[in-house]
Amino acid sequence: MNEKHNVQIWKSLQKVPAGTMFVPLIIGAIITTICEGFLHFNLWETLGNPMKDMFSSSGQMLLIGLMLFCTGTSLKLSDMKDALHRGVLLIATRLIVAYVLSALYFLAFGYDGIFGISFLAFVCAVSSANAALYMGIIQPFGDKADKASFGIMLICSMPLLPLLFLGFFGTSGFGMPQVIQIISLLIPFILGMLLGNLDEDIRKVFAGGNAIILPFLGFEFGSTINLVDAVKMLPQGILMSVLYFIITIVPSCLVERYVLKRPGYVSFASASLAGVALSIPSMAAASNEALQPYVSSSVAILAFVLAVTNILAPFFVKWDLQRHPANEVR
Image (cartoon, rainbow, N blue to C red):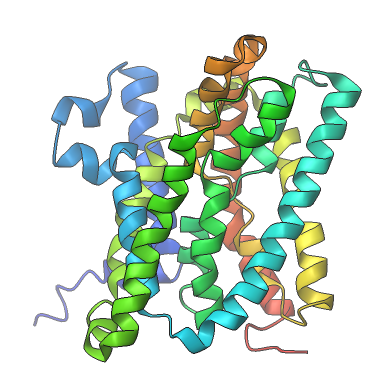
């Protein structure tokens, strides 16, 4: 009798690539678009806590910290070698390409950029990776080293590196607060890894922690997406989305396939913009007035890229896995 009344929502979510995060993300974006775009009020601010921190971006860093802790508990020290080897090499490849192209972009087109894509929008886009969505995508099939790379990849999700890079083209506001932020990110991961290695029971208790966190994190990322604002910059958003995929996937995938001898799904799984990237333009402009005129358009472009990349990344991974299975080691 109970079986007939079981709607099986969770099983339905799992049929969608990264569905446990992706579907809540879409629902969150729709709610944000209706409330902010049409009704002109912030639902989560109106409701206050605990709803605000559960479903809006205000609670994002808390959930990311919990995810770091849970990921750390599942990582054995013996797995760290592969995690650092893969994660550092792929992230280094990705960032070097992104920042070299960003520098060339500035030298060629200045702050204005070209085709309506400012230098500020370009940097904030190509230097960002949504580590949380990456974790949601690779959760079902990635090995422990893939999952441990989450902690390394999370550096790409934060404003630290873009602000540091923009410092070469003006005052970016980089200083001790950003250093403390990196330390704050590392502590939960290291603490979880320490406790998980000291006590096997702790590893077992927190083994399913990320599965609980991901749907809420999806809602929180969705709360940063206003589809109305994204559509206003449709041509620039489409062009920037295409550039984003080319710049973030191609170099990383070549390294993953031919240097690391891995299937390549990590490069596709990490090809999505982090929600926090939308906050970087205003942060950068606060300490560099030359960037101020480009803040509004940059946020609109980034909102579009955020929506497109977070929607398409799981399907790109599914397509890549059909060509190169997850257990393929060359």
